[in-house]
View 1 (cartoon, rainbow, N blue to C red):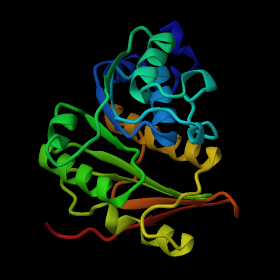
View 2: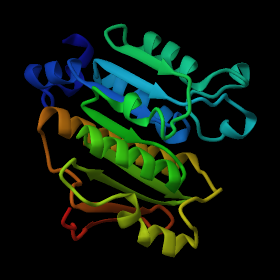
View 3: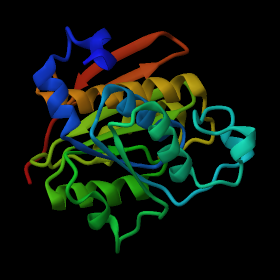
View 4: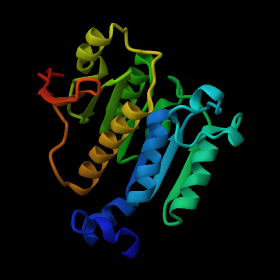
Length: 233
């Protein structure tokens, strides 16, 4: 337990064991996904499945933690898998260099304890939500727009989807589900909040962002949690 001694008072041996036995799938290895994988590996999640068919390019260098000038053109998930090996040999990385679509979405998440939605478009988010609902897997989702962000956990028995959660950020940012402005600070905060939800789900510790959303605005130093009225299935 020496590796984890700095957080042992929060995550005792039993909770650390739960993390070690868990499987988390991260869909989208961009800014959020990269940060999330780094944290999950360091905290000791046993198996991390990473789904993304993209390759690193220069526009990723401003915020994607695994992107370097030396690995431009390389597969994001392969680089991330190698990084996991460097961080924690007790964690198994499972890189899947594919893009999620209607044909493979359920197969990609099946067997996971938690799925992290690190996608940057509503089409992908809704597809992933449908797959998680079909497979009865909790999904931790986030959407970013510059310095704005929202994070929420969608449990399998909830009829809420990403489109129900993000009206505020879309209204304030003036976007329709996607914003081209991507900043490292907001990316890292969103990923940190998402991974903390994973820890809560796996170890049964703390209060989940289920049936509610956490909204933040780094430009105005705002962090707010608001309830979201659930719908009947």
